[in-house]
Image (cartoon, rainbow, N blue to C red; front, side, top):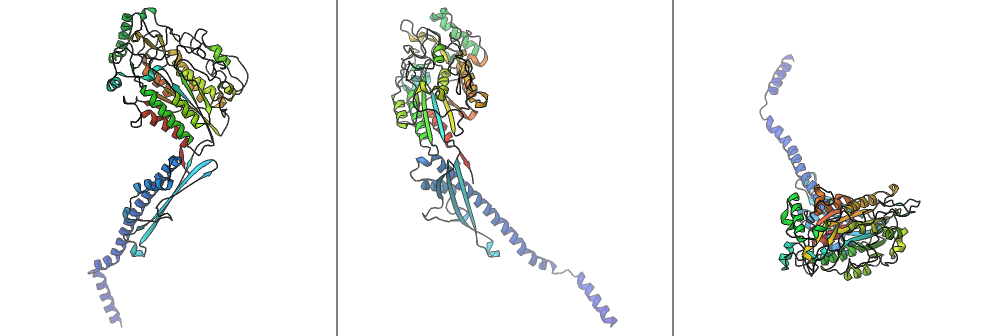
Length: 553
């Protein structure tokens, strides 16, 4: 018996030492496992890519529909157009699951807690390359997106719009393209014989209350007390020396300024403007304003929409010139009559009060007229102050129209859009012996500083005496080197160049950098019948702010 066991043990030891054919056995066991793992990795990658593409397609389509819902005759068709562009048919072999309308993307919308919500949903079956190994030939993928309009229910907007005559002029390059004369005999921001362009800095009547205390003024109960009181000097900054009425002296002063800034090519003549009888820039602005008005009123997520317009040059025409805020009237320089005498500011449209009437606004814009032979210079700060007052219920009586929501309404948003085509300026004179080429324009430091200070106050929260107002700014057809100044106001650096200066001031005026726009001029062929102008795109983008979206699913 021991011999038998001994023989078995020896043969077993020999068998253990024999490894021939072991690799084949291991391979037979491992290959299916490895193949399954590789197949699973390939299919997982396909699933991951297909799901990501589906997610992106549904999100993009839903967001696009939410942005343009009111303008779309068939939101579902438009949504599917966007979806199909981002998730092509048979993407990775996926078979889209069609809804009852035979479309891959389902679109619906509803109002939820004063928000407009748009929902998009799509699904597909993705074939698996190695799924058969585990008895699964396809994998189901789907995605749902819900996009909500994050807007306030009540919106009050005032568009502050430049109506200086330079809106009917072109830069030399544009004028040449349009076949207009470029000899420098042009009317820019002319303003008669006076260089005065400021409002006396009276603070107005002091009264108690939680008003919005503006620079140069005290608070009034519950409102924007002090906004109406101008803070700039009645002399509009230091006047130019009378010797500059001499043509040779003008040329010399310009040459000296050019030498300081180093851009003489920008100031070949005392005036940079060329007459544009077609008022190309104004025509583009009018189209932009109308597109803006329509886009805002088309927003069905809003319950109340009120829009007003403040056209300005260096003066303002209230709806009733005999009914203007008392402290505003008292603050003006006695000889200027900024709100009652428009003989040196024509043509200047009247302020359009806040209104809920879309057509009335469109008609008012259509009626706006201007001429390159007009008078007036630029004071955007004056227009901004009036806009702030228009948004204050305490001053409703001076504007008429719809009553604003006020600054403490949690469901309201107050917006001011400030547009200018140049720096705040004064004009030393207009014509001499009928020759407009002798005019001289200078940047008004007092008004530039006032614009900056007014914006800063308006943006502050109501708890700090501000209006919590959202501000957009638009600089239209302004070159960095516009209005090269002399040393009359003791300024230096960026302030010697009106273009850079106003871009800096209004850039800081805006609520954030994304709300400040620097827009080139429309082409010489005008905007009517031509491709959409840049100014139209900007105003449309500003209106789209009220359509701002957020994903809630």
